[in-house]
Length: 104
Image 1 (tube, rainbow, N blue to C red):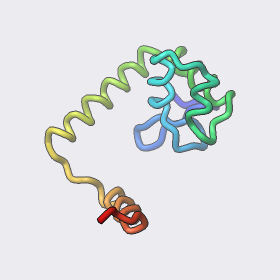
Image 2 (image 1 turned 135 degrees about the vertical axis):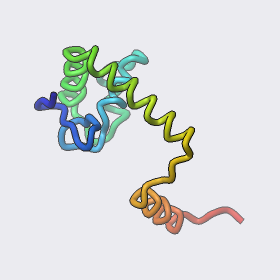
Image 3 (image 1 turned 45 degrees about the vertical axis):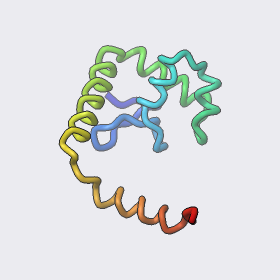
């Protein structure tokens, strides 16, 4: 279900060529943010990216709404099960922790 503006990587939809998820754009759009505001909120997006993502959502609204609900349930299950963080995420968090001075 990918298009010029949206691609799917590892079961997650993203704005093509970015690390910005379609979900982020959809949630902002549902909250009433204008495409111009969404573009300002996500560095690296063009207005065409935002309009393309919104158009993709509107063209596939039932499927994307189901996808977002599935993701919500998935995250809730991970929280309930106390699933450990992935090794990649743990490594990135540790890198950030080492680079940030903590208050004494």
